[in-house]
Length: 243
Image 1 (tube, rainbow, N blue to C red):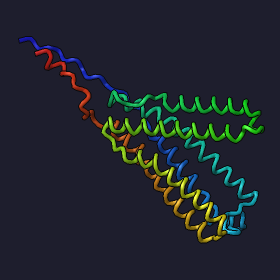
Image 2: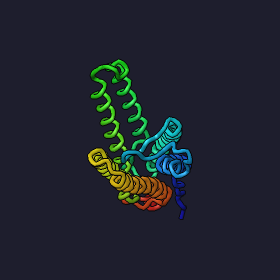
Image 3: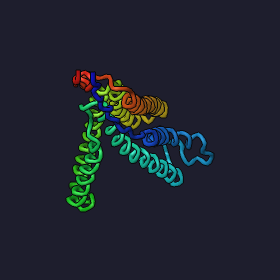
């Protein structure tokens, strides 16, 4: 009886995502924790409290600006690289995945919208500057939530937990609401205690959001590395078809 040669299984290429994921992690945690560290390590009162709110002198402002730029750059580049490589890895696990071009196309669209708004408002100097900035920010938030929602669906498709992605989408809304309430009450009663209470709650929710974001990426990557266990690949193996 002649044996039928079995075609070797196709090897799916895996792209490393560790470095982009660490860039996002360091940028998020660094951007949140470094200003707190600067406040406690500051011996010259560059950052302090006055009338129930934070007061920062020019030296402190420059320090904050550097921290914000570095953290934002790490998150921007790391998140862009991670979404591309993670989407490519997910395609090897499930056909119902996310396109690697989702975030780059969102960035290009938002950048084009910002350029158009700048030209329309004469570098954001005329009376339409406020609405133009609001439109760009709203579209940017919608695009960001759209990418997160797409990764949430892809996580379900590859067998990764989708709860962390839900937390990443919902917690910023809670943080924004609490920050708005905190600003209102702080301005109304000028109390340092109320400022600290709202700031502390916002800080804790921000930590939870970052932890959920990091967990979402890590579990997504682990599921991409794991074996194919989904029900999508229902084709009969070659050695069974040959018998």
